[in-house]
Structure formats: C-alpha cells, structure tokens
Length: 341
Image (tube, rainbow, N blue to C red; front, side, top):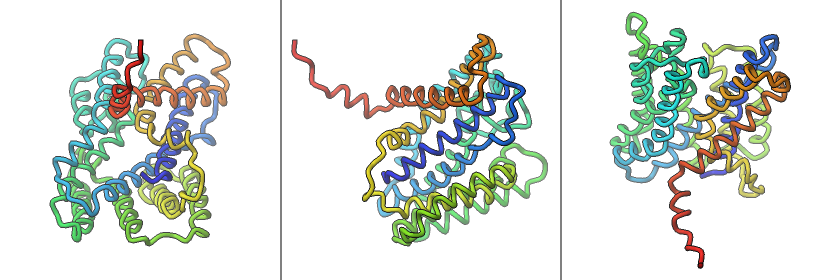
C-alpha cells in the first residue's frame, strides 16, 4: 500500500473525529459557538475517493472473481461493523439516554446490519444507520456491489461500464416519483467521488501524474479549498464543492514520491487503524459527553480540552480495537515460540 494513502486515511479519520467532537461539545457547553469551528466532515469525501482508487489499483491487471472480491470486502468491513451495530442497539435498548442519535427499532437495526438506507427513528430527517457514521458504509458497500459485478467485464471496458452503470443508477433514482428513501440515497451524486478515485488509479497506473514541483502546492491548495468550501458551502453541494478538493488532494498525494522521504510511523499506523477509529469513535465521544455533563468535570467544559480528549481517546480506543480485531495480528501472536520454562 502506498504510504501516502495511509497518511490520508489517518488524516481523514481524525478530521471526522474532530467534526463529531465539536458537535458533542455543544451538548457539554451549550454556550459554545461552533459555527467557526465546525469542520472536518469532508474527511468522508477523501475516504470515498481513496476507496475508488484502492479498488481499481488492487484489481487492475489481475483475474478476480466477484465472489472472491466480495469475500475480501466482507471480511474487511462486516465483522467490526456488526459488532458495533449490535452493541449500539443494545445500548439504545438498555440505556437510551447514552446514545442521543439512536433509538432501538428492530427494522432500523436490521437495515443497518445489511447496509440498507433507512430513516433514523431518532430523527426521521436523517438517513443513517444505528452507528451513525456507518451511513458512509452504505455507500461503500453499494459501490463494492456494483464494482464486483463489473469484474466480469473485460478490464479494457470496465471503467466505461462502471461510469455508465453508476450514472444510469443515479439518473433512475432521481427520476423516480415520490420520496423513496433508497432512491434519494442512491441518487446522490456523491457516488461520483468513488468513480473519481477509480479514474485517479488509472492515471496512477499509466504514470500520468503531477510534477513534484506542482504536486506539493496542489496538495496544500486542495486542503485549503476543502476547509474553505466546507465553511462556506453546505452538504447539498458536497459532490463538487467538497468532492473536487478531495480529488485534488488524492491526486496530489499519489503524485508525490514519498519513497525519498522518511516514513512517519505513527501516521502510517493510524492509517492502518483508521477504519477502527472511524467506527468506534462515536462510542468514545458518547462516554466523554456523559462524563462531562453528568459527572460535572469542569475541565471537560473547556472546548480545547474536550476536543483534545475526544481525539486522543478515540484514537487510542480505535487502535486497541484494531489490534484486537485484525486477524493477521492474532496469527502473528500464535506463531510466537513458547517461552522456555
């Protein structure tokens, strides 16, 4: 895996953690004005571009059956997400005040487990699963489903088939009458961010990259415009106002020759653990919110302290879960020779 992809995964995950930390801060300190501090949601857009990039990069030039592709994606995504979903559902059933964004409703839980878009019973204006950040996984799994089917198409035509299929699905969903939840969800042009990642992977493999003297400034500009656009534009325009800077960031990063630079070990590791951090951070933030509100720990009402604690403990918690749930680490542990008596 390209080390810069790991860096971007880590940064994107921490951006999302920061964003949700500021949202929680409103509940700990209702007087805090978040309007100038609420950014980081665009980490999701970076994730989507990266996902499309990695899927094309890891399947190009090799024979892969759809079932093998699905098996790998399921092994990567499902176990931790199902554990988190079932845990959140149990908490919502037993201690509903802990998770403010979720209430227990069996159809909602079932839809969450199978990555189907469903109205949140706690807030019907939102189409989110039991584990709220998992709405992105509903898009991920949908993209994987379509991408896996198109592995049956010759690689020469696969990208064109992918763009045509996704465009047809989006158009079909957008012309359907009524307010169908699934149609609104799958008709969102945010799906094009995955396709942009696929195109970037093709450019990378064809060595159509930015010069080094351009890539670094473009990377800085990409992050700058991502921050500016997130501040000025709402999510209704995210597919282009947030998506384009995310595409520039990924294209710039893959153009930079990181082999000549020292590896930033901790950032590389956090990239490896980014999925665990992303899935589990909602629980960490909920605990810190309860501690801050109900135990009256005054220092947690301090905005920088609360947000710093959220990022720190979410990172540590995600890293621990990553260590416990990564099969390769268990195999490595089992292979260790026994200590002589």
